[in-house]
Image 1: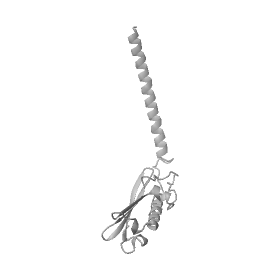
Image 2: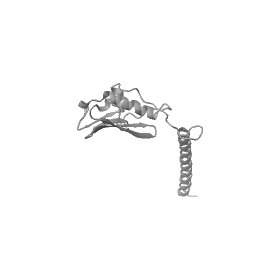
Image 3: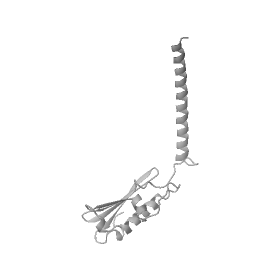
Image 4: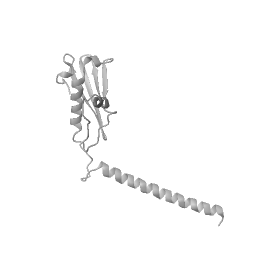
Length: 147
């Protein structure tokens, strides 16, 4: 066997070893992902505190907001800023993961005949918007007219 043939065989063995290692890592990653995603009864994790967290965020912004905060008829405040201003405690899922503070926010829009409050909360793999509407006369201090 020539030196080139020996190098070629070594290169083929190295490629096989690398491929086996990559496949093993991929299998381990899939197993870990499935273990984290699913509970013992093979159902996806359900965040039972999600709606409660959204409502807490909604109530915090309703107590904080006033008309002077509107800029071009809109005000947006991130969950991080709500934390920084001590408007709300850290929101966690029912499986003790923190909600994503830079992706979650509340937005108040002044429409022609009412206020619109959108609460966007991102926790784990869940991302939803809670929208409610309030009368212009009493603003966010009154009960919503549409939820």
